[in-house]
Image (cartoon, rainbow, N blue to C red; front, side, top):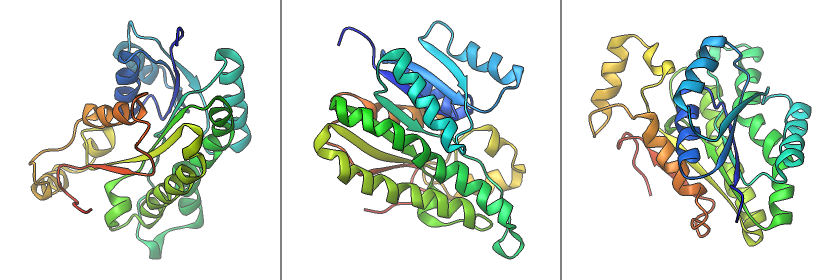
Length: 247
């Protein structure tokens, strides 16, 4: 191709999202970070992190189905296509199920899982028509193991991989791959907000003895979105330092 591949990363202004945007741009993609965060300090930090790279950002509520459809249509009208979609946006509303409200349940399901439908549905049509696409959904180790106080989050993250496998089967012969990356605990603002004693307890359980770095996750996403990764689809790649092992 003469022009760069076009990539969208949701939750692009967060810690993982920024690292993913930077890594994809370093590999020659034109990247659009989609995020609802409009705080000047967040945008300034993002712009600094991706300075000099082919990266821009746009406001998007990933829980809004109509807004997502319009966003994808706009990307395709402006750039002619959408080649890579990374569904990274996510929130938490942690509380035990006995105390969880319907609002807390719906918020997490709508953002973490509903957004995957909202964006894949309009994006995959063009990918199939062009015979090329890469979709990566960011799940979590807690979607594999469950976590106390996270029935909403764990359900959404487990559901993401079920979605991944089903869609992968639907589009495999059309040149489109769909995969999941399941991070463990990483050095992000979300984890940094935990009490030190809890963070120390988490690290003690991780066989490699440390938290992950955003770049650990970004490298995996870059691997799965590469043009020569066309024989990998419907897979989940766990990146958790050995916290959860399976086959």
